[in-house]
Image (tube, rainbow, N blue to C red; front, side, top):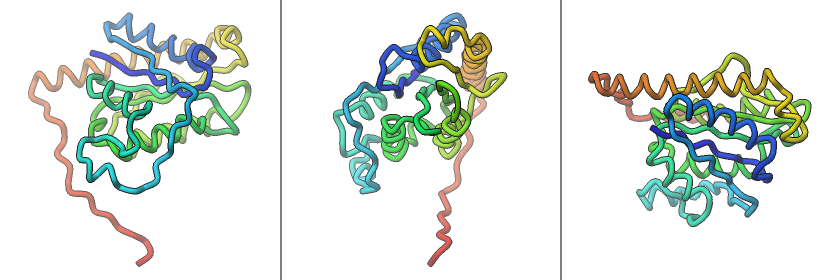
Length: 209
């Protein structure tokens, strides 16, 4: 069993990484393998709604060869994902939102049924707004949303300050425990014949015709 924590910060080993590492360590204690995947600092092209991915038919975006394609291949072998982001202007980073837009638009069907969670780090404010925006990617895609004992955020301007946020780190560990429990529960359900729900064909209703 494996989870892919995704670091959407431009700083590879900054505050977001510190939070994700705490979750990953707790997952490891529960027997779940992890690999923290950093999006890097190269620009990630946002989704243009061209629908070229539907013509490819392989669950990838036509603008391939970047972090989106790499993460999609990694997620094919993972049982859950965690998306971490710093708070930029009370929202997630532009890097991570561009990444998620293309990942979910082109390959969301391969993520359905896999637990997802968001983690945010901030100096002071805006955490809940950024957290909410990230969760919506999971909620629109039939992915069980993993929660903790508080909203999944840590506070601090440096990794050293984040390590002083004892409550935030405890929230990260609880998140790791809850995700491990859910992944194991899903696996146990499959072994006993509990099938994934069959989905109806999507009904799309436009409000202006």
